[in-house]
Length: 240
Ligand code: ADP
Ligand code: MG
Image 1 (cartoon, rainbow, N blue to C red):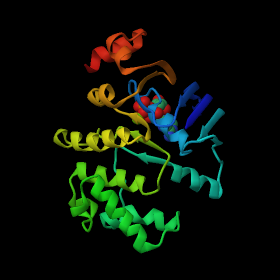
Image 2 (tube, helix red, strand yellow; image 1 turned 30 degrees about the horizontal axis):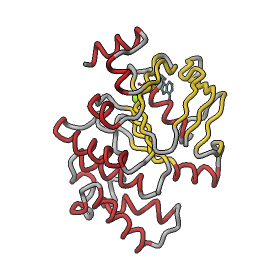
Image 3 (cartoon, rainbow, N blue to C red; image 1 turned 180 degrees about the horizontal axis):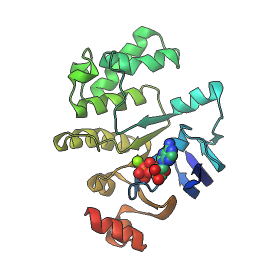
Image 4 (cartoon, rainbow, N blue to C red; image 1 turned 180 degrees about the vertical axis):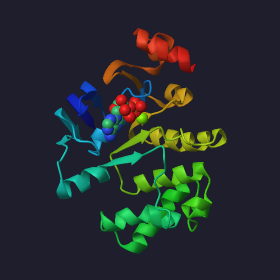
């Protein structure tokens, strides 16, 4: 579903992704770990082309990433992304937040989009918040709305970049529960997170990044019980 081959990304002189190779088969859940500044967010952002790459190639579902135009809109629909900051439209209700893009991009009729949006809000457990504005919801509810909004585009892949890092501790689990359900339903997911419980339980694979490189690529069991590199040992020593 995702194939990255020899991907290099520079910010000016800064070499942020260094020849990254990564394949994620359909239905797999991959957790990306690594210290701050190792390139995890940039990796996510290259996959839906929020960041262009300098060399190498990226395919999503067998299609090379388009550079621009209509094809780019289709890619963005195929690759859902959820950020640390929920990025909901502040002046739109929750149900409008979820139904807006399907109407605009997928050309779904407004009534149908609303119906689908309500079903998604039901799935993430906040149907009763549908008519409220984002600021009236808790952080955990807002992030679940953001997940519903991404799912409304019927993506083939979901990217999560530290989706629980901005939440109060008591709201982390409700968001992880939604993500775990999504994983069990077979969604292909790339998840940057510091939630080790989620990595152990929901991940098929753990990728450890350091300095723009994929340093380890293994099962959660292997990674947590016997990390191979000193950088991973050092990282785990600091967070566990
Ligand atoms: P992570 O998500 O692992 O913390 P990032 O992908 O955000 O790492 O950043 C990797 C490196 O790229 C860092 O050194 C960061 O400062 C730098 N970087 C990220 N975005 C930009 C940008 N838009 N312009 C310049 N440098 C950036
Ligand atoms: Mg980041």
